[in-house]
Length: 339
Image (tube, rainbow, N blue to C red; front, side, top):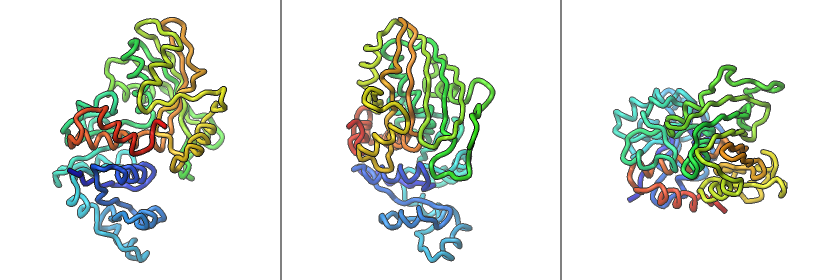
């Protein structure tokens, strides 16, 4: 059986999810939506992807540009089993009534509130709880990264307390209207940032407090973690556990990978499309243990880390795979992860 997948919103995340769907042997890409006939819409059409206008009132701009589209979002969702909503934050929730009316399942992104789906998803943490659900929210890039490492360490040693500082990119590379340009911005000034409570939507028993800062870079986020473990663990123990998990990559400063720009260069040399790095990246030398107290630093490629999670969410909701390991293995192999 192949599941027909629609992508509502063909931007930073949407185009990556669309490319990933095209690589799955159990999925068909039904089409994508765009709000305007820009270069992304043209590239999608050049790939043979069906492009739809996001709404009836957007059709005219495509007609004026001489670009043929296959209809509107309403037409697209009539021809799919699942829609992956990749519209901007807080916009996805406005489409939920349309999805419900059409009787299609929907995957939302981390820019939406937990309540839009009533369930927040991370493949390794709670795949089984997503089986058969009609609506799922894939948590944000930062929350995805934190969930991966905290889940692994909690399973091995227990995590009694987590204190995390997030150094966030100011904008994605294509966002030329965002900042900060010459500032370090507490984002927000208050504590906690939303990331800690969001982690608890997936891992409710983790005692976590987060503080976040936006800085003038576009490449990645960096997290500094201070954890109180349930039992003592050496640096070697921690590295062994982290290295055993899918979608966690250890890199070494001794080999020259000591910054986000070097991670991007590493991804380029691996031949990654768009220099994507869907794995959570942990700097080996940052792992420092003082018995039950652990420190580590990790990096998150904000444009791609949630892409495999979206694919796994589709499989869980449609029961294409009954276990996280089965789905994650298929996804990772199709996307060339882990190598």
